[in-house]
Length: 280
DNA sequence: CTATTCTCCTGAGAGC
DNA sequence: TGCTCTCAGGAGAATA
Image (cartoon, rainbow, N blue to C red; front, side, top):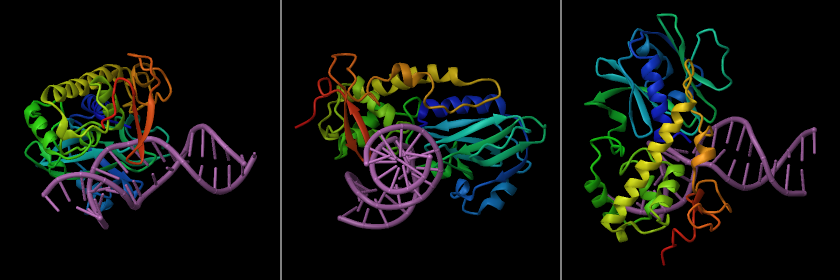
């Protein structure tokens, strides 16, 4: 559920509330949350103790907190992960997985994750980016993202355009929801073969990705309040602004045709049968 | 090498 | 009411 805009909302919250603070201790309440930290939960906690958070960074759906010494606390929210900034004496959340306390006695940073697809780890930085995510492409809001390189790589692939959008090594930050929204904006069917896309159409697709994510980010900002870093996918934006995703049988806002749901990669794909013509 | 499928997980909601 | 089934889906691992 959390895609680039939601993760960016979290990053901003962390930048505001966690930057410059020294970690007093870390507690791992569920080992699965640190499964990608190869040295284990105890080492994870020990590695964090006494470290100071320098800033909050993000690429695509990953976010990380540089800790100095060439290392960072790297996090992926998965499906249901939340980073909450809550008073240290707040009751333990039902799905609390990792808890960080700080030497200033201020609010905790808590990683809460119902479905445990998310994870956190301490990882070395290689340049600006944590080593474990070096294979991830820049996201479309980074200056490092090159539209021409994306277009070239996209047309070289032999797959469907939606699969390509979800391929984080090609473009990062796009998940199932914003993929459907971007395709609707670009009037592209999800199954369109990437090697048949024209350069102008790829331009429309990238514009669609950027527009929908920018718009979502503007509205995502509203779900953040002072002591609470919210990753609440269903708030505000989803009710009002989605044009395709989750709108099965509802009229397309451009042409009135009922939106169609197709099975796609063991999940769903929503599109307008009229605006987004199925390829032969 | 590339492209695709499998797997992990919990809770909400539907259907009987 | 309480059970079973389906669905939600990111991304690394496994497979074709």
